Length: 171
Image (cartoon, rainbow, N blue to C red):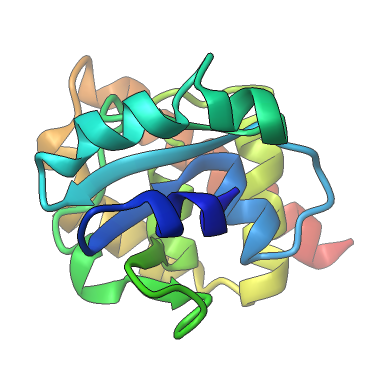
């Protein structure tokens, strides 16, 4: 799928990937995902091209059973871009596929906070050996100021996550 996008691309494209794709592919979670959530595309005007060539209902989607979802609805920590990790370096001629570091990826799921999200966070904590202090500090300084809705709700979510992660470590 990504190879076909690379071949079709008229120019270099960098994709910042979040969601289940990043957790399953780079952080080895065994859960199927049918889409690749892309939060940011460089250059910006390539996002429309990607959506038309590889988005839902596209020929590539029909051919491979996977599609790109331009998902700019998550809130990410302010300095996430400085910590991006390239996956498949040198594999493609024009594509650079980047994923968030494990703390930023976890925090990108905080606002939605679904059951799948907390399971993803637990997995990330296990494989990355999370330091709870780093997660809490990034939340406080890089994410909390930009979240919509009541701050108390997000603070509670983080607290519940930290408690769940502590319970997992003790088990």
